[in-house]
Image 1 (cartoon, rainbow, N blue to C red):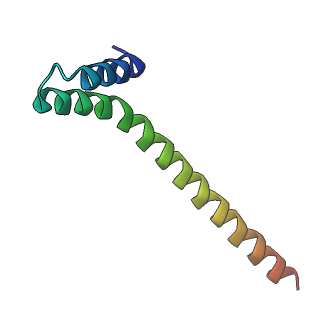
Image 2 (tube, rainbow, N blue to C red):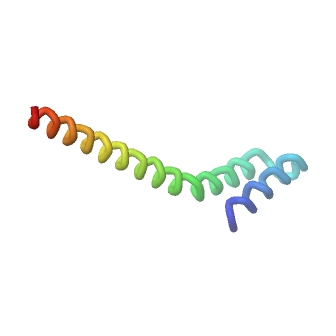
Length: 68
């Protein structure tokens, strides 16, 4: 089931109040389990990219200082 389908179903179930709180919590958990790995991968990629950019800036600064 896609994330969009899970969200739509959750919204429908919530507004209709046809399920108990426990069921809605389970559905929210399913949505989070589907989304969190992707979010974690994006965050990790961004952190790695920032580290590389910082290292490149340090190398440029060192190179400039060595030329002086």
